[in-house]
Every structure is written in structure tokens, then in C-alpha cells.
Length: 143
Image 1 (spheres, rainbow, N blue to C red):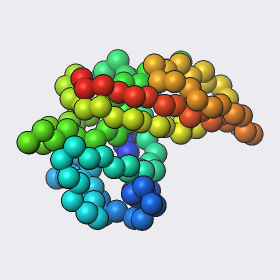
Image 2 (image 1 turned 135 degrees about the vertical axis):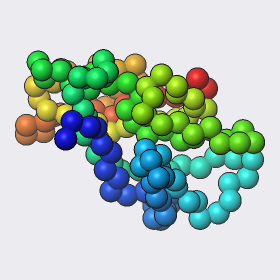
Image 3 (image 1 turned 45 degrees about the vertical axis):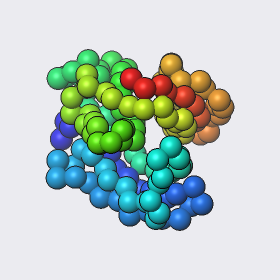
């Protein structure tokens, strides 16, 4: 299968209690149900652990090429914006990202043979047998 895929292993709140989640009919949008209603103007933290299978860059400029290089854009999960109505965003269209201010931390594991370049801040890096780890942090503004 040449399609990309996201496999979610856990969704928890800021106190690490499990949250209910489901995929929409198109399977490209994830719905997370909070334990309590989030009042307007308030924020919460949601921790989602998942793996991403990247597609080849055969149909778009993003994914991996035949030299083993990876090109990523809007590949990680982002919360939908609610401003009186929901603005749902699907990665099926790579040019329509609509997001609010978010603070994002990504723990990224990748092979030794790759080099990581990102517009996120790299807050920590380490090596382990046959791989590397980097923590990326980004404060994203409405786009």
C-alpha cells in the first residue's frame, strides 16, 4: 500500500487519564471527547501518541523519494479551530491548513542515516543504537 497512515496508540488528558476518541467516516479526522466541557477562552492539553507511515512522493512533493530522503508538510495531528463553528482540516488536501494558536511538542525518532531540519525549535537531541531522538517544539500562530 502506497498511502500514508497514522496509527494512534493513546489519547490522554493533562492528568494522563484516557480520553475517548474515534475517526470520522473519511478516517482522516480524529474526534476526541473531553471529560468536561471546555469553557470559551480556556485551554487544555491533550497528549496523543501515534506513529506515522509516510507515503512515497509519487503523487505530491511530500513523503519519501527513491534516494531515501523525506519531505514533510502538515504531517502531524493538529486541533481543529472552533470560533462559533468547527473548521475541520483534512490532510487529504495539503494546501488548506487552518489552525489557531497551538503549542506543539513532538518527540521524533528516526534512523541514524537521516538528518533532521525543521522550522520547529529542536529542544533536545540524543542518539541510541540504530537511531536518533529529537524533541521539537513549536508555537504556531493562526494560519
